[in-house]
Length: 179
View 1 (tube, rainbow, N blue to C red):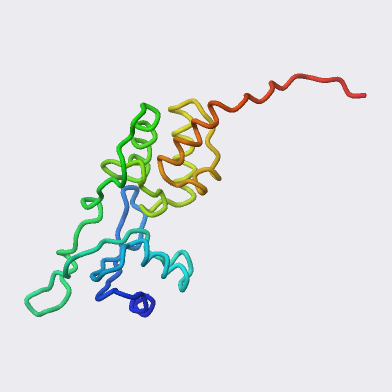
View 2 (tube, one colour):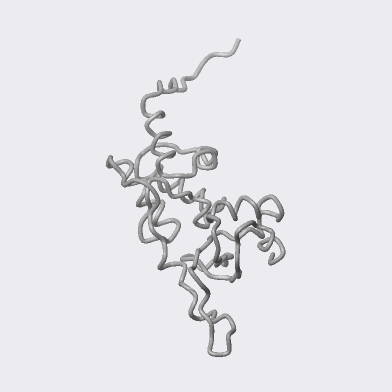
């Protein structure tokens, strides 16, 4: 992993630590210094590492905290649960607000913005199933898991839900006679 991180242009220093998410599941968190964005690092690591080895959360630091001996002070690293800031615009409709609240709840975040990526915040297939079920239960619609993989942000899901609301309803199933 360290070799792969050193290969990303602009990364000055990086360290990967194991952390537990809100549900107690282990996840990899990458702390880094340098000029690239988290998405650039994720993309580069995705090219060189298997998916399970790519950290689910990337945190940029101006510099690493050091002990008096000049070593990395792991205890002083930022707690991933306290550094999330919602991405993008705020929800404009009640449905968008509900989708953002469900995103935050499922991912264990304090809040989620309309442009927060589900998978960039540690989401995985099991949480995707939970998210789809919660959205369906709260909004009374059916959300396919595929929709979440294709549009993994609250904005994308809200747009899909709006499309589904305006689409013609499927005809009701009725018994038919067989010839």
